[in-house]
Amino acid sequence: MTEQVTEKDVQLWVGPQHPGVTGNMSVQIWLRGDTIQMGRTHVGYLHRGFEKLMERRKFIQSFPIVCRICVPEPDTNEYLLAAGVEEIAGIVIPEKARWLRTLALEMARLAATLQALGGQVGMMGLGTVPNWTYTLRDYILDRFEELTGARIYHMYIVYGGVRRDLPEGFAARMEEDLRAIEERLPFIDNLIFDNAVFRKRAIGVGKIDPAWIDEMGITGPTARACGVPRDVRRNSPYLVYPELDFDVITAEGCDIFARAQVRRGDITQSIRIIRQILARMPKDGPYCARMPNMLHWTVEKGQTYVRAEASRGEMGYFVVTDGSDKLRRVHVRGPSYVHAVSLLERMLPGTNISDLGATMVSMQTCPPEIER
Image 1 (cartoon, rainbow, N blue to C red):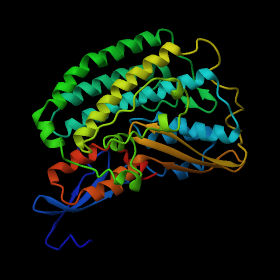
Image 2 (cartoon, rainbow, N blue to C red; image 1 turned 45 degrees about the vertical axis):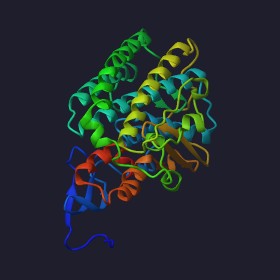
Image 3 (cartoon, rainbow, N blue to C red; image 1 turned 90 degrees about the horizontal axis):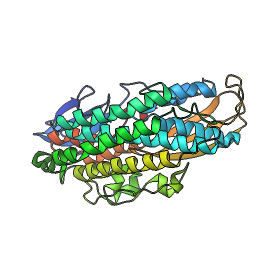
């Protein structure tokens, strides 16, 4: 307990079933009237313990584990696991694999951002938008199913490259989906950003002090909504991002409205990136390097840290190997811990209880990323 909480304050648990709290997690709050005096985030109601599980699995067996660290966007975890081990093992992936990996990451970013934007306004009662955005997300999942055989857990990015090349006609079908998304975006803009209800509940609500950005390690749209152009794709380029033309979207409000503006801009940029990738995709060449038998593969002793930009912000993997057929240690650094624990708990005192869910959802967290 802290000084701002007294025995007269009401203690209330919000979640883990509450739709306004991201995923299966709970926020314990102390109320005085309808004003929150203090809040504590509790996670662990979902699958967890990924880092230790990977220490007991062969290298290839870790991909089904990392996919579940963030279900709406598993591909970033696939890439980081593969990139970390490849760096230690000295594996250079083919050029075509670099383009295909980037395509998978941007498709995942587009699908996850559509879901996040719809979920943000759905939390405020504007149910039409999530119906639209989840439908549009399903179009991208159709392409994932065609490319990987799975809609959610793709396990497409593997050591040495990717599992398969693009199916015939994939680019044309993807273009149809991108056009369908673009046709719906003006309606989404009207129902979100020109909506008096959303504006009143989002502008000036859930504000973040820009001084907290470096102090707390805030990244992704949460940082860019404070005017900080922080994006790993630009700051520490990887794969083929240095060869692509895209903008790092920022806003200045530091509030829920600004975070929604950034995610709306990210949708347009992901569409732009996907089109460039498909237009410049190498026609020939291997999509995976020659690899040893995965059931008997050992990796020399070493360690590295790799990072990438997920839709939520910077993700990093610290990977350690010891010369055996299993990972010695993996530590996952995702943005959800900062956004859903340290940042949220700092923001909650003085917040009206009706703004709790909207504030939490605006930071787009994955609880399993915290309880690893």
